[in-house]
Amino acid sequence: MFSFLGLLVPTPKSNSFNPISLAIISKHVQKTPRCFAQFQTQASSSESNSNPNPTQITTTHLQSCNNLPHLNQIHAQLIRSHVLETHHSQFHWNSIMRSYVRLASPSMALRIYANMSRAGVLPDSYTLPIALKAACQVFDVVLGQQLHSTCLRCGLEHNEFCESGLIGLYAKAGEFDSALQVFDENPERKLGSWNAIIGGFAQAGHSKEAINTFIELRECGFVPDDVTMVSVASACGSLGDLNLAVQVHKCVFQARSLVKTDVLMWNAVIDMYGKCGRVDLAYKVFERVVERNVSTWTSMIMGLAMHGHVNDALDFFRYMRSSGVRPNHVTFVGVLSACVHGGLVEEGRNYFEMMTSVYGLSPMLQHYGCLVDLLGRAGMLEEAREHVERMPMDANSVIWGALLGACEKHGNVEMGEWAARNLMVLEPWNDGVYVVLSNIYAGAGLWDEVERVRRLMKNKKVAKTPGYSSPTIFSSFCLVLSNLAIHILLAV
Image (tube, rainbow, N blue to C red; front, side):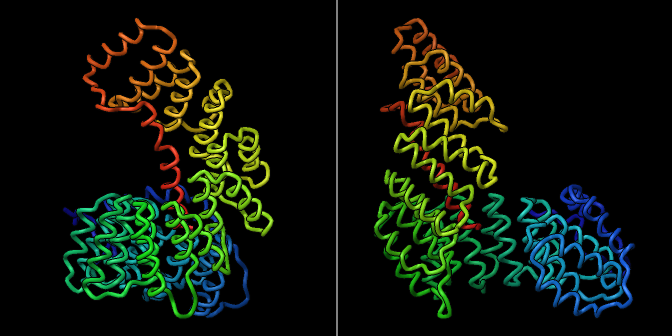
């Protein structure tokens, strides 16, 4: 299953680095050569009368570092003082790698890991989990396999943090067979491994598997923690099972920290109740959260918007702004979804414009999808088409589907044909496209075209689903947005 070529561990007789592994890492760091060159320039041109203690630089400075420019300066000083070259200790390498991962620069963390291997420094039980997290952030399962090989070489495959890192990486890449193999190979697995597999299932939409694994965790005598319950609450919300949600909420009370309550966990509970249709219970949890962040507010807005509480959702957005909390991309998905539910065209336009003019947020595919759906439902098909044509990215099947549904509702044959052609390219197997196009032709009395579509379906061997209703292919629009939102929320 795994490729054992190009192990990321230097042999005792050589400090050479295997070119296969270096090539894998290099494709992630090609984006940062200018930044690395800046390090070298800073290191060469920096003038200082004294060399601070290397350990002091590594510990004190890195702990207080909260931005990339500052971290770049620290890295340059480490290069200038030759700390990483002369001290064959993993501590300094691990510290700088960890800082780059923490500040969302995984490519540089991998570059440092490659240089560490070149310098003949063996990775330890702290190095590999950091490298695995960086590989996970750049979505590279091949590099993950190389790191897995290194774990085996170093005898760290059953280390709690290495094991959970491997499971999380494979699960995020959709390689659940590999994730489960790593999970099953250790009969003495720790809670971190359980959390990794449950979180992987939940984030991939395998909600039932996540809940079943959680039940198995409890049967094995483990006590879940905050991390466990965030994933379980997310999975429960996706299932929409209120009875299960109440049981999960009880487990949350048992699992929460005695020192302080995890805001992330309460955000997941708010989202869970919102998805189960109990926005009243979601609001009760919301009221008890003292330090509300953007995800707390956004969870409430999404829950209210999803169930048609349009005015309440927009009121929450106004309260959020007046509280000084800055909305993010997911917040605006919820706000625009509320406008779609309420048919608030002018308000939707204003909020869409507010993203860029007030908060400097570039609209993403989901925001364009909401706007096109809003305009299409209101019969403003030409304006919707203009937005589709001006989008900086290609429209997906959800946007084309929303536009096609609007054309059916308002009887626009020409635009319906345009939307259907594009949707057929993306989803040639989707019988709903042909059904809706046929309905558009039938509504306009174009019976020859209706017959042509039926022949086309027959020639392409696309069969109409029995008992099919044409709005079905578009009814999942808000569900797609809400599932997207919770995964982003959990990462905030």
